[in-house]
Length: 190
Image (cartoon, rainbow, N blue to C red):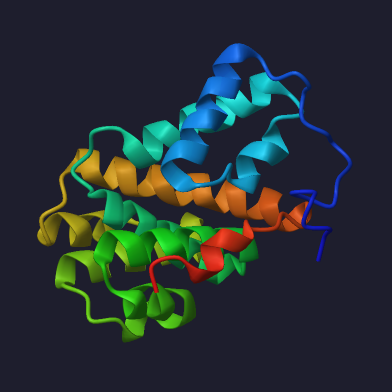
């Protein structure tokens, strides 16, 4: 584990002072979340990288979509579980607990999503995300058709693939840099 004062094992201090737009964004995080997520601090050594990361995150996780915010967080947790990404499991597990109002759902998704009480749509979505994480080259038209069969549009499939891809990338960076989740996440929404 890294020193809790550093978001990663790398010595990449945040730009000081932060540009006004970045400081405003961090202030909003503190106001809404009670903290600045360590993933943001970790990227703040280079404001262009931070902006690229937050731009992509905001697009895949917050933009208009046929996927709910909870469904996108569920994908994040399942992908992170397969990849054993400590940071994302803790942070996005808390988000699943918050959005679902169900602490058990966050835990079961971390451990084994197949044990969760999910509807057929959610199960198909998470099966697709899991396959994309472990064997993306094996995805075929039948996998996409399986998603259509439970009500996902082609745009939704695009969004499932993008959320899955984003977290596969983020998990690898977080694991490679020993990124630590904020302590606050551990007790949230239990």
